[in-house]
Image 1 (tube, rainbow, N blue to C red):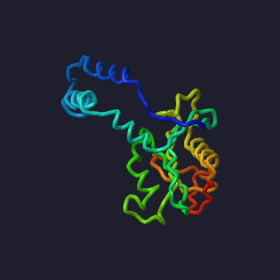
Image 2: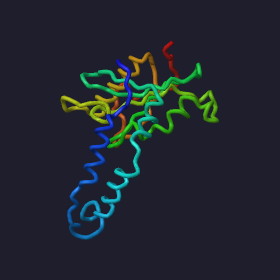
Image 3: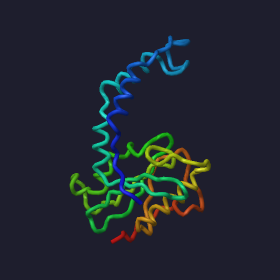
Image 4: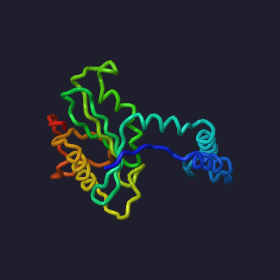
Length: 196
């Protein structure tokens, strides 16, 4: 396991801005609605927003506010945030995003879940939050093989939590399929022994 920090070179961000500015737009195909794909005016507005308004540096700052790591599980590089609660009785909580989401979808809840006292909440509801990126998504990758099914990902998350010293966890997430029966990571357990 190694520490990780999001820090894209400015040249890459400048290159992206240049590419967005240099886009050669096609004529609108078919009707102007969504029946023929993404409407051209919508797509132009989206590209302009990415080029002119979006601040990747602000996103980096939000992400880097939490401890991040990369480790290898079942041959795949796995990126994850690990926000340990200052509360002594905090329960481990694994939050996983779905397809085609990202760990960024949950950034706003990491602070309130891991340190509810600082966010006006009840400290007895604190969690040690583990927020991994699915294999092949975000900073978890690239993958070298296929076969990352829901049960395989669940087993990888169980290995991650065990590696972090949690013998039980309360998994939560977003996915298009229910947990796999018989998979150890699909159980919800509300008591734990946190690492010391």
